[in-house]
Length: 479
Image (cartoon, rainbow, N blue to C red; front, side, top):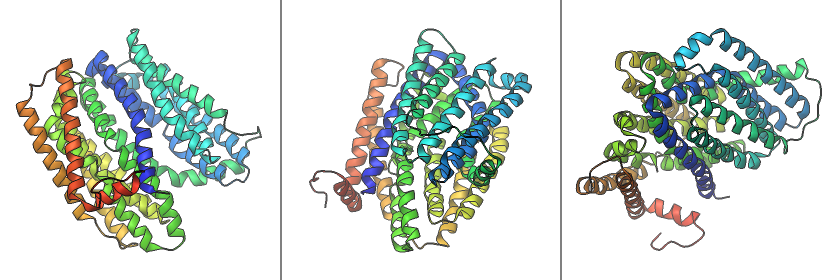
């Protein structure tokens, strides 16, 4: 297997669904404005914390226990019962706090939010069952289909005049539809749930939850805390900036997803030299899209945000900081992924715990003092602190080379790209909220990306070799 090809396949499959998500975000932001999008983002933040126990704890345990092949039906049925219980507890708590929650969100939508919670937990269960029964390929196909279906439905409900409630209803419908399709592939016999199986699931879940909680913290803590300090409109602008930064991380996620099983397998065979090579490769290409994205955001961030509407242009500084935060976090994630791969989950647990604690504390303090800029800075600082921690923790178990030259080439190629983009911005037509203006922005981004990759191809022999090795045809001057 060529790991580079696998990462590229992952990238393009995720990129396709990201395009659908981008179109939906663009349309929602255009139709509802920053305030409407902010209400929607806060509703999703509340949803994320309501489903935390079922989705990031029990679902991971279901996948693990079912994949072991011992009494899979019992674990599936017991896991479903546990997730239903978690839903009931979350729903009762939310109903008891209906007033404060709806005031925080900015709209009376708790009822539809609870329907979405049930739908998302149901989808999480079926996804866990697919992965546990070694049907990851089915899950990999259905997941982007879910995003595309959700995006199409949300565009439809906005077009006919529904607001945030309609967006949540469309979200729920897509989740239930994909969950029902997933059930066609899942093999399960109805058996009675038992306390023994519940205990076994809980024993795994209590250790698995923190790594996933770190992801939740990275994705939602800033938006959650912002909801207490700033208007829904600013939350909407911040969330759009976050979604743009997220697109640049797809390739980095593809690398970590692809390399984890390889690191785990090689580590089990006690071959540290090969593990070290994989770690170096992961770091080498983690910033392949993030680094030029950072330069691009500094030069055309306002133009990109203008596509969503004039009121979103105010988030250009936040966009730049968030891309930096996600770049740093990407390197940290590659190292934590390595630590998990070499079977040192207790070390990864401590790094994740530090990240969650630092992220929460810094977000509260810096948002309180500096508003939404503080949220972006807090996320970047939390990622930087735990990157240093993860680096020294990894060095205790592995000797690996930092590919500083390759990262330097990426930075140099990005700077060359930046010169070209700056020239086009200065010499080209002014920024304006029109079809021509947005088309100009797309052209600038496309030319900039081409300049970056051509420059990197010329500068880096390693990059040329990697491209040649992973393409099905010969590339001229690749050696």
